[in-house]
Length: 141
Image 1: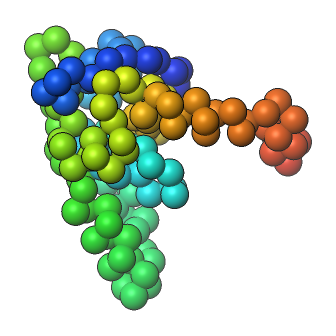
Image 2: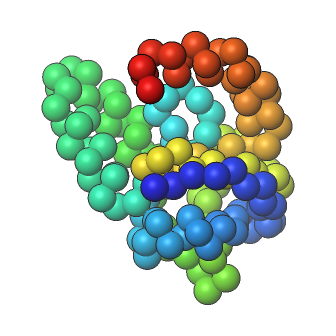
């Protein structure tokens, strides 16, 4: 399970260090792509989760899955860690997520999200304790 939030710098070459705890969960090879949940972030999927997502998308009617596939696959890249535990975020993804020098990495269970730090601060400010409590109340936990 991927969880936790981490602030890291992006170097001039577009490399971002991933915390070792998260690297262990991701494995050796994984996919980085545009986020598909209506947010300007990058998603990082371990291969097993990527394959599960691809399978689910394939279950949509072709008239709908084609659009999702074009959006998702056009901006998807297979990535590996360098010797210092960094990943190279392709320029097109850095542009999409407005990543420049500061990023916030979030483990969200089955994948990571990489956010522009300022955009994440704005997004996160919407998650009030009351709003989250309202959602959690539906769990009957």
